[in-house]
Amino acid sequence: MTDRKTELASNLARVEERIASACAAAGRERADVTLIVVTKTYPASDVRLLHELGVREVAENRDQDAAPKAAACVDLDLTWHFVGQLQTNKVRSVASYADMVQSVDRDRLIASLSTAAVRAERELGCLIQVALDAESGERGERGGVAPDGIEELAALVAEAPGLRLDGLMTVAPLAGEYAGRQRAAFERLLEFSSRLRADHPAANMVSAGMSADLEEAVAAGATHVRVGTAVLGDRPRLG
Image 1 (cartoon, rainbow, N blue to C red):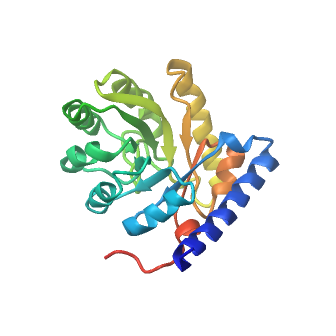
Image 2: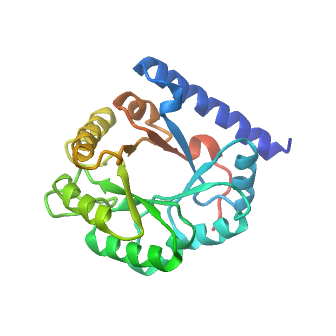
C-alpha cells in the first residue's frame, strides 16, 4: 500500500468502528447506516484510493471541484452526492454526474433540476434540506428550507419529471434553539421524516451527522452519515 492508501484505510477503519459502536448502542443493525465519504477539496486520486478500499458513496459540495473529479473517476462504480448549496446556473453541470442532490431547498431549484435531468435523460434522487434554524418562509444560514416548507417542496419534487423524492437532510445548526444540541436536532429531523413518509412512503432516507457528531445522528435514527475529515484527515487540499 502507498502511504496515503494506508492512511485512508486506517481512518476508514476508525470511522467504521465508530459507526458500528453507535449502531450497537442504539440497538440498530450496522447495515441500516450508510457511510458517505465527503471528498470535497480532495483530489481524484483520493477518490480512487477510497474506491479500492471499498467506498462506493462519495459527496461533493462545489460543482467547480466536483465536475472534473467525477469525470476523472467515471470508470468507477460510485454514487455521487451533491451536498452543497446549489445555484441554478450550476444545475445542468451537477445533473450530468450527481446521482443525488441532498440540498434541495426551494421551488426554483426543483424546476431547474427537473429540466436538467430530463435533458440528460437521467433520474436524480433528491433530499429536501431542512434548516432547523430558519423561521417560516426563510432559508437557513447554511441553506435549507424552514420546517414548515418541507411538505410543499416534497410534493413538487415528487411530481417533477426526472426527479425522485428520497427523503430529508440537515446540517446541525450553529444558531437557534438546536445550536450545540445535535442529538435533539437530529431527532427533530426524524420526526419530520416520519411525517413525510406518511404521504411519500419511499422517501425514507435521512442524511444527518458528520465527523464530529455521527454518533448522535446514528442514535437519532439517521440512515446516512456524511463524513469527511475523519476519513481524509488534514492533508493539504485543492486550491
